[in-house]
Amino acid sequence: MKTFEETTAECTSLWSAASEYLRATSAAMYQQWFACVVPLELTDSSITLGVPDDFFADMIRINAMSYLEDALLRAAGHSLTVDFKEGYSAPVKKETAAEPVREVKVEQKEPEKDVRPAFIPGVRFTFENFVIGEANRYAFSCARSAAEHPGELNPLYIYGGTGLGKTHLLYAVANQVKRENPSAKVCYIPSENFLNDYVKACMNHTHADFRDYYRNLDLLLIDDVHNLANKTQLQEEFFNTFNAIYSRGGQIILTSDKQPSEIKGLEDRLVSRFQQGAMTQITPPGYETRLAILQAKQANQSTKIPHELLVFIARRVTSQIRALEGALMRIITFCNACLKSPEEITTAMAESMLCDILDSEADATRVDIDRILNVVAKHFNLHVHDITGSKRPKNIAEPRMIAMYLARLLTDLPLKEIGQEFGGRNHTTVIHAVKQVEDDCKEDPKLQHTIVQLKRELHVIDD
Ligand code: ADP
Ligand code: MG
Image (cartoon, rainbow, N blue to C red; front, side, top):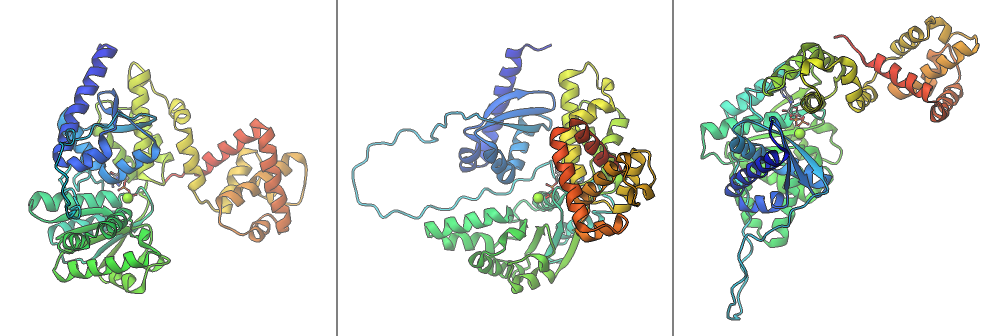
């Protein structure tokens, strides 16, 4: 077994090798995102990096994650997952030596040239490691065809909820195009960063540079275009960028959480440009795909957890692939840190370790009212008609209030309709029940527990 000092030394030396790669990729990017990062802990499968705060970690995730993962891969020889811990900052050294003493002369200051790091192919987000299922098959094949025959599906617009693989597909296209044609001008950019770049160009008077870069791209991948909404001047710039790339036969791929027509504050001319090519939606994956994704993610890890645990995660974490990955990584980390063998882990342990993820999954799930009535009735050993009926003994009145509370929380039905479903009761009865349950929960941990249990029961869907 390695000593603490040895592990720390390995972590530091791995980070300094990775830093070299990052610096070689782009000194500006290194200085902006990585100079103040502190290496904290290294395991076989992950590295923990100290950063000043959560926001900084998010900015790295958005702006430079693929570079970081690539650099770690090259330095370690295998891929590592990255955890960030807030509250750390290394003293940032200036890249340049002390300023030489110069003669004072009046100089015309040249506008600062914008430095945009070139896209470097990575291994994390590729077509090969994208698991295909019914929910993403069409999006996958469109993205693949845009990579193979750029300009044919133009633009390609991919939309869907968060954590479902949109960014992964953009990177997969960029990686494939860049591998096959290293001289292709490729840019992946989230639309917030496009905004920042535009603002910077306006401030530094480097507009010409900005236009020259974006309008001459062969492939522009712009992530989360809903963030262009309500920014008139930026939309104008983007419209012109779009037209310039399009008319030169360059490929444009856009992602968003909604269809173009549903983005409020997006100009009609952009809506119609976005609609003129191919549009494809990614929806949450079914159980089989979720399990296949977990198996694929586990294949890259040295620790293997028992199959029934993968089944447990796949059944319970249904809304986002990001959450699915997060749950798997948390269990693997726990097995490595606390157990002699991953075989020792039980479903009950996993359940308590993942309680926050499971609870937010349960809250995100919309269920129908019949299911709520059935699950609540079964839980309290009653019949559905007891709950919807008019009798009021305590053993029925309380489950009835709980069912109303859950109906309010987990369906989109208006109060009036909820009242109707409960034997034609008035909507004020529903308001009263919801308030009563909320108040009682504050005082009564047993009731809180019952509600959590019921939410989880409601959420276990066998598809
Ligand atoms: P989005 O951009 O839609 O919010 P991401 O592309 O960031 O989602 O995906 C979230 C995480 O889930 C990423 O780590 C990604 O690799 C993973 N992921 C999403 N879809 C798949 C898939 N079909 N196969 C494998 N991994 C996937
Ligand atoms: Mg994304």
